[in-house]
Structure formats: structure tokens, C-alpha cells
Length: 137
Length: 173
Image (cartoon, rainbow over all chains, first blue to last red):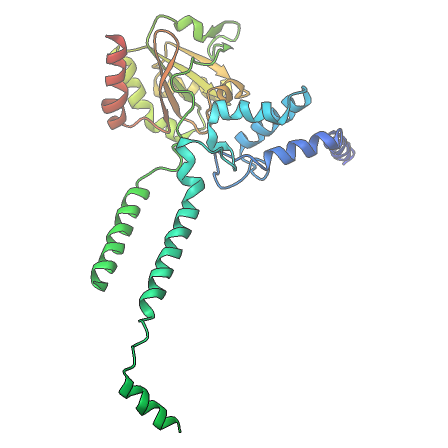
């Protein structure tokens, strides 16, 4: 029991060692995708690889590297796929512009639809006007 | 007119799904293709006091296979790796990933050892440099030490026949 408590206290002490660093690690790994369970962030995942990569992130930030450096390190190995916010380039153009293209199509469809639904008001002949005027009296 | 529209949308959806559902979302294009194989200097699995480096393979076309004894698909692909090694097209180097010697060595004894050498990456640190995220993974590396192909997941007989062997022959030519 004592040993268990000791381990627990040590563990807590270790985790609390540098809250600022831990926050940076957490913030950065929330931006990164875990490649094993692809819809989880590196921060959320408990896959062994995610743990290893989080340790890498911590080690590198502790070693004085910037967030940018760590991101470059991971992208060089795993590709843009690790980023939850992929950069805009030739291969990701569709990803970034796709929703707007769909929106434009939707608007176009809507405009055409509305126009077709509203036929031009029929011209009234002089006789029709007279009839209408009579009815309204 | 309305029927044509409905049919058009239906066909478009079928095509989209037919293509989309066949893609493997786990297969992420590796940025390492065309780049030099990351450097390593790791102890051998069978001889902890000896080390092996990717430099030892310079001048040869070779295959790097990342495996572990705890990895079921590795066992599934093992006959393919064995066949590749036995064909003599290229030497295969094993990288034992996050494993224990007492598990990995009996695994090789049990299933056959096709590797010219197996390096022991117990922490999985070198595997990170190789962008490994799921064992098994297999790399084809050319004479200059440049990665030419990467397979994520088990090597199937089709992949061996249609991708890896033709590439090895081409690189060896």
C-alpha cells in the first residue's frame, strides 16, 4: 500500500513537473492526428504509437524546439495526414474549396429553380382590363 | 427530364461510392518515397553486442520488413516475405518493432528466419523515423539508399507479384 502511494505521488509529481510544458504538449497534440485510430487526436488516443509520439513531442519541446519544428518533424515522417488543419496546396485544393464549390452549385440550383417557378406576369389586353375594372366596382 | 436528372444523380452516387468504398483509408501516402532511408545504428536481435546500420546495405537493392512477434498480420504475410527472400531477388532485413527478445527469437525459430539480419528497435524510435504506424510495413530501398516503395500492412501474394518483385527487378537491372 505504501509503495502504491509512493508510486502515485511520484507519478503526480512527474506529471506536474512542468505544467507549462504539459500544456504545450497537449495543445500541440490536439492538432495532430493519431495514425492508428485515425479519427482521434494524438492527445486523446491511448494507442501505443500515440503515447510514443506524445513522448517525442514532449522531448522535443523540452529540448527547446518550437511547435513548428515538431510539426515539421512529424510531417516529414507521416505526411500532411497527421495535421488536422492541412496546408493549402495542389493536392488539397479540392479539400479546401470543395465545400464552397458545393455551396455555389446549391445557390445556382436555387436561383434557377426560383426563376423557373415565377413565370412573367401575363399581359392584360384592353378588354380584360375593362372586365376587371367592372368586376371591382 | 426529371427521370434523367434522378438517374444522373443515382449513377453519380454509385460511381462515387464504388470508388470511395474501395479506397483504404489506412493507406496514407508516405512522404518518404524518393527520400534517403533514415539512418539507424541498432543492435542485432540475435546478437545484442553487434550493431547494424542502413549503411551496411549501400550498393544493394534491399527490402526492409518491420515486424513483431505480437503482430498477427506479420504472421500472415510471413510466407510472402520468406518467398521473396528465397527467390534471391533482394536481401530482406528485418526490423523487430517494440518486441521482447524472448518473444521475437522463438517466433523466428518457429516460423522460419528469412532475414539476412534483424535489427532490434525495442523503443520503436527508429520506426518513427520510418513513419511506421502499423506493423507490418515493408520498404524497398535502392542501391543509393533511397526509399522507392512502401507497403503499409501485410504483403499479399498479389502485391509481391505485381508491385514488389517487378520493382526489385527493375532496380536490379
